[in-house]
Length: 233
Image (spheres, rainbow, N blue to C red):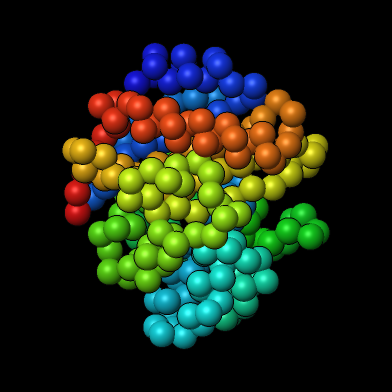
């Protein structure tokens, strides 16, 4: 897979990274120049699950908006429902750890004015793919995972349109202005389901170019199912 991905990456104007893992078991592979970065709105997935764990049946409208529309105000409402910022970060971090996503230090404090605290959490692609590999299989994730299959048009890039796609995007400017664009997803293949975490840093620094890079990567995944580690719950 590394050789084939290097060929794809060489055609892109910017840096790109990919991690894939088989659904149900984990144990995947990460390739490319982008291995990690701040999570941006992909962090809303474990945040929303933390809220459903704490208050089953509550905050349903905010959870839906946070996942399907990537609504920041709704996500801030969910964050506040978990207690103090320290308590909210701990609850979100436990979800990541419990679902195999590593011991991620969820950011509890606003480090960049105008952006959420949790969105600035550093989360590697490899760990995020391992987390995504458990989402279809764990009952506590069922509500949020279902919403990932109904995302709005502002997230219609990357693997959107691939069979069985459930996804959550995240994007934002770095401290120097250039955008990091990320997507966490699960897709279907003939051999089973694959968890995907991918990220792009376009040479132009523009969000639109980053999302287009990930759409091209989604097409590359569609064309190379034999390279992907597939699994089932």
